[in-house]
Image (cartoon, rainbow, N blue to C red; front, side, top):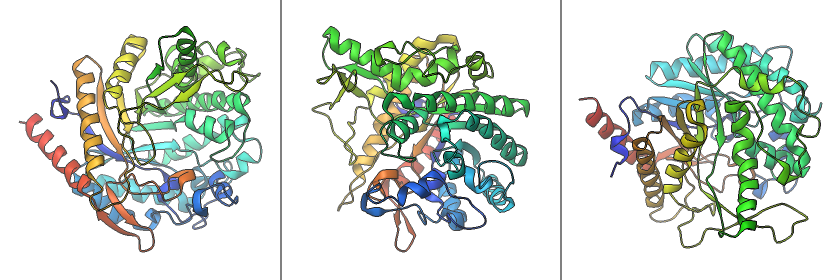
Length: 447
């Protein structure tokens, strides 16, 4: 049976982070406020009142963090650029100090032999744009294209590939539908114009990047969806959830059309957000790669209260769970990737796992669950590759323990432990395991 050492020759190994989760320095060197700066100030919005004001202090300590990456022997580093650090009000005047930080970061990565893979939007929208409607306002998509041009013109001579958006599903649902993430709106399905405007932003930004000869990716959180039982009601509920979580953000980009959203009660024009020509703008630039963020499968049942949602999320019993409570089913990653390959066929570009990892409780011997999780998922990745799926790389989440959004500092995903009082970094056993895996893979595949 194929295992992680059988991944294709040239496979790229990396780690992933995000700006608001690690950078800190939220009020330094001209950075403007983001929606997350505003959200964390709300009483009760984030567990124990934690904020990203300091986080991992990566803004000042990035040389130390790059040294840790170099010690792993990485091919690539996926990070995000803070839009309000570059354009403090989201548009207009550029902040030179913000661009200079990413200049230094990119150069330091290249000096370490690590290829930068930046994400342009990882949820930290400039507050000034949110004040004008945020992603519910169509104009935000055009401001995103302008921002893309600014950073691509500065860094594109050294950065060959870019990710436009990170997890538009999660940002739309948690930020605009449920209100548990910034900006904290609770609009339920009427939040979906925010999804369309993010996809429009992707299409506009992809055109900007392609004009400059740069490759374009989009990363979304994807999950295989299984019905709780074979009953027709559960099958219908699972199909409705799959359309919302997965196909809403892949069909427009890969096929140029939205999936059927009628089971969700959503009109075809997504409450007036979709205009003539929009789907051409989303689809036509094309993708050079699709980023897959995977953590767990999802089990769906028919709703117990049809007046709320057309589905219920139910737990998957008799499997391990992470400290976050997420079920651990490694073969679900293989199932997801094979399904994408079969569903989209020639429309599917090469895949990269742009996030995969788990939070683990701190204890006497805390890291074996993380190693087991990563090992099993990489074996599943190899099985998908053996079934014909074109997979180019794997970026584990995350290099460092960090600010885990509404959970604050309570969920620890890092290969490296961070003491948030002292900022001391301590590599975990999983760090050594990942380093040794990369070394062994290269030894086998570069003979």
